[in-house]
Length: 235
Image 1 (tube, rainbow, N blue to C red):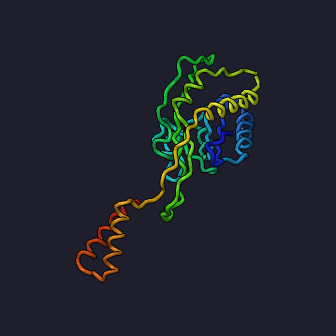
Image 2 (image 1 turned 45 degrees about the horizontal axis):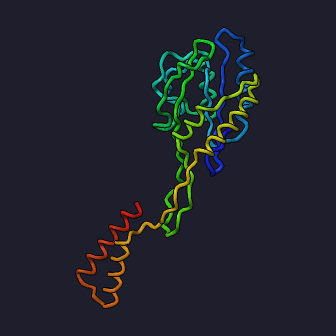
Image 3 (image 1 turned 90 degrees about the horizontal axis):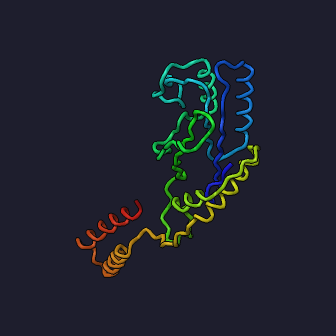
């Protein structure tokens, strides 16, 4: 479980390796049971990745979470996986464009077999709950992660191999949080006002015309101009 930023959002990553088609049905049942247990812990985002040893093929018209661009024909294990996906509401691949980018294969990493370790960037942007009314306030300092600095810090880290996946995971999280803390930068506070100084001057001019009782063509043009500039500032 990874904590993302200071908003207490969490990312849960579940790595799986499903039994092959030659395995017994009991092994498959045990696999899905263990996967369900791993999903019990709540998180903001969940990524289930690995090898399911299943062929999903193209999604059917009644299926919401499986796309139409799969390859090959769906097999028996694919039917089981599609049932789980549709019942849990998990998207196969991803449900947002450009969620994964800069995907590459690390050929220099020796896994001990013919598999290769992939690496990708995940673009995560907080969901907006709706437009809020414009207010004139100072935004607080917000922390951002310098990607280049984080990558440089991780290059010099030596990860331990304790032959215990839980211990290795805890050590990895500890190191990652430390590197993220070093790579965090603080953006300066900025004025949160959406009305520019020019617009404020126009509003003051309109107020003077209204005080003098000059409700003429100049006043109407000024009102229209102010409405347009305020709309541009809000958008």
